[in-house]
Image (cartoon, rainbow, N blue to C red):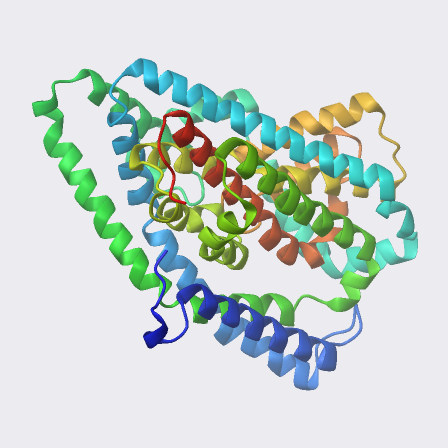
Length: 439
């Protein structure tokens, strides 16, 4: 990523981090000083703070997110098409695709297992009394019902596989947060380009190359606004987080956040060292802007252009590999989301008083992996699908209300391993191809 020289002041990653810290500090301070007790209406100063956060700060943060989402569709299509077309053979496409999907499956499953291990060990759900559960559910019942309604609109897995093949590519591209249809079309078109004569495909390749380069330039402009957008997003989240709720479900919060941090700092770091030969210090220096962007936007899709740029510019991954892995990963490789789902299902089962057998927990693992693949890469995209997993193990979906109060901060954190796992996958594949990564 771009960094300012010392003569020009602070680097962009430092500015983004300062925006994050400043927004969080102000938001938490106002919440601690003025937020009413759980269940009571906002009045006085806090009502003004909430109105300012909802009416002014959140729209500004959403504007920054919209600017990032604006380039997602052209980046997904152009990078994936160019990546596949540049592989040179359908056999190489199959080999690269097989290794990529294997990486997604193994790392996502490992993340779920870590989450289940932590919940079985600490049993955070045993600490939530019926009175506390009722109190929190009353506060977030409306939001929970809205999410449950979204989950009930979800289709079965067979239909989801059918829907991967789009009848209308333009409509698939316009479907917010769901780009599997566009990805499928780009993969098929790229594979066809491998077999077609070069002179026939060169105009389309040149067009996609120009489109991708222009999107990268637009992204560079948008990222200059990142410190302000990040400050707005984190301020809104922390000012309205509800520290009382976080205290009441504290063990869940600590377990979920702790699992995500452990997976990131130990799991992802070891994967980068073992499979890509990248030392921890080098790895996190190279992806510092990526980490902050993922955390603040809570969206793998919004972070996608930054993930590609980080892989190619900071680590030297070839464009065809980064362009192949990253769009797929932003949709299918959700390590942090799967871990969160495993923790949440077992936690809510403990609160409800359901003891899940090993067989039922194995079902949770499988469904967490599948729903993580099906989750939209947007803020809170996994919550509707989480309701489906809950009902499969006998826990009422309404219990989602217990975790919604702290989900925003957990959502921000789980996005980081989602995108860094994609990055490490591309580093591993590049190394397997004999590419000398940047030291």
